[in-house]
Amino acid sequence: MEHAGAEPYSSPDEPSCPPVAIPGQPPGRPSLPSPGEPSNAIPDLFPVSEGERVLTELREQIRRYVVLPSAEAFTAVSLWVAATHLQTAWQHAPRLAVVGPAKRCGKSRLLDVITESVHDPLITVNASAAAVFRSITDTPPTLLVDEADTLFGSAKVAEKNEEMRGLLNAGHQRNRPTLRVSGPNHEVAKFPTFAMAALAGIGDLPDTIMDRSIVIRMRRRRPGEKVAEFRTFRDTPPLHALRDRLVAWLAPLHADAMELTPAMPVEDRAADTWQPLVSIADLAGGRWPDLARTACRVMARHEAEQDQDSSSLGIRLLVDIRRAFAAEGNPPALRTSRLLDILNKDDETPWPDYTTNGLTPRGLQILLREYGIRSATRRFHGNVQAKGYARLQFTDSWARYCPEPVPETTTGA
Image 1: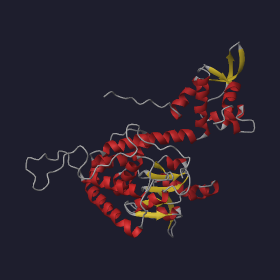
Image 2: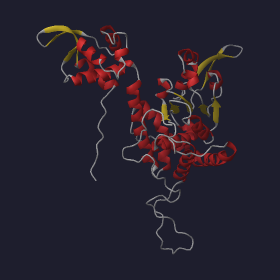
Image 3: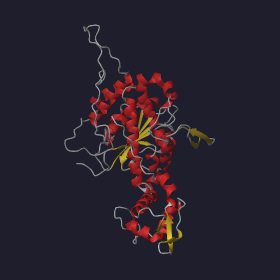
Image 4: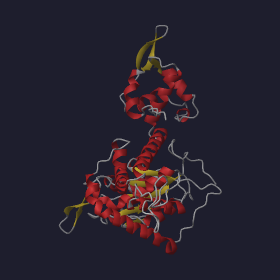
């Protein structure tokens, strides 16, 4: 059964499931001479590093047990798992948000698989924030939270777990401790919060957590999409072997990782969140730097589009007002009445149902107030004076909160 969720995100110039190189013998690379071959056999000019090899094998292990929405998602999860083994080298601890619109999308199964390959997993379903932050040390564990939607699912529950949300937000960046009064002398103690975390649940997590996450949007498998059953006693040894190889590969590179400042295809918080993953790819070399940056660009763009579609009503209103101006030929100003008429006639927007009378002039003013946009009496065609909005009032907010996507440039062959 296929749910009616978001379309899969994938790079336009890369197939959704590209062929994976066989470890030690990638496509296009001559192989090492076999025993007994003549000494003039073509040597391997591009030897595969252990980093390339173990990341590729990890990706294939994940692919055995779960269906992810794109090739980029497999790349991202593999790099995130590897990044947990160098947590103390990073400035930011990216969250992995594994979300889906319904049950049976494979969220818990993905968490099962990565649990066996991350650094020092700390699994919780309903732990208190106090218990979690007391479990975080200077060498942090990897937090794994299943059924995260039960923590934040309703307003009442979300308020109860505001402390957990604050902990998860603070722990995204180094040196953001939580303060607590403890001990018989009621002294203030600092508890570290910095730790990488994976959270799985139905529906989106709170915006502040999603904004700090690599987001994997799971979907139910189509009929015919097959994966292997995951059995703990049978299937964890290969994952533990990969985990041990990740440790052996990355531990000597800790100092190098701390010095890395990789070129990033995104900016601001998205760059902070993705930087550990791109750094891991650069340490591995081969195809992984390109794969990582493609995944970063494609998945970050997808989340930006999701955010624009489903974020606060204010940003949605800015987008719809831009469309209203465009539909009218981008005049210098629109009457309030005409703008509301356009907004309230679009059944695919929230405005017709905003109140029993749709979006009203008062409601419009309230939503635009936080952007510093107010109506004023203006002169319109026919020397008629009426309340309205000038297009120039919106240009700054459009650029800041909902910029038009920049067309991708293509180069000729």
